[in-house]
Image (cartoon, rainbow, N blue to C red):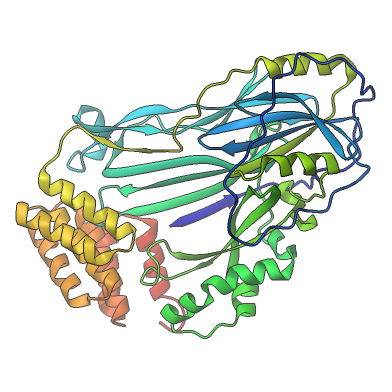
Length: 486
């Protein structure tokens, strides 16, 4: 899994008392929609302590709280006055705000064709469709305005491969900053699958993704960082044959991989993700990722998740209970604009939120290919015995199905059976001269050679892979062989 992170640079303390709060708490409002109390099944784990509240902050302020509940988003407009918060309105939609502006977040999906791996990449338009897949997109539409901002653009060009799956979700945020997680997995004309997760922070008000300083996360409290790294320390050292301490991994090797904000029994909870780069032979996604959790902390200010929140907002969140994703926005509305913004909020459209993921829909396929797809799925789940059994079944159905040999060899490799992996890779190379598949199989042969400490064979295999189909993976593998000590 290749993980990337883009975040915010500017520091924004959520819940601070500065700015221009509404100076007229008695300003009339638009008609109020009934606000049901959201409840979920209580968790059996230990209770999470809510963040400290600011008792006198938030007097006469407008806030939005937005959360994902069940299978859709809800946004609640609150009027906060000290320790109390009254519900002004609620919409079954994702609406965020910044100062006096509001945006409704919507999906903007497209449907594209999936082409066979037998097609030439430069002539995909003339190649018949093998299937369809929904590419996921996200946009923000300003309420009371005409502007639209693209947050995550959905691909419009055809894809080449098979057994593809995509995901897109907002996993938290503050003000008009959204933490967005996108993912993709599939077999993009290779001998084995790839899996990528990218976390970004998008500032809707600024209309762009924001970049974090690479080492900003090292200011987080030490227990947060230590817990995340400790969760991967044993596995990392076991595969790499090292004895790095937690401090060495944390201070010299770890990097920030993302964050998410949820609501756990009424308490805002940040999930922190730290990762350590790994050799391909140890992790097919080139990284180990560990997690830890905390409440809102001052050091999370670059994400807008510093806290503490006003007491009224804290009480409102407690009444919601649990939520998969959470965000909040403090509004600073002049009297002359408040009624208009509230009217736009009340008129915001309500519609079911689309599925968080999509899969490629095949336009046909053999029984053998169906078993290959099953084997690949089991491989991704690290259930290698069942994966190998599925590939066995595919070969029984069609002994010339090259992808079955390549997939079974990869499952054997991950399971630690190098001899069976080598036999399947050689069979796949003998049965197919298709460059894309051969490139991927040669890469796996190089990985096998690395496991056997045969640097000469590994280099030859990676060079063949790179010559047939240049890739960053093969380039990185060759660079790793040239590292000191190799």
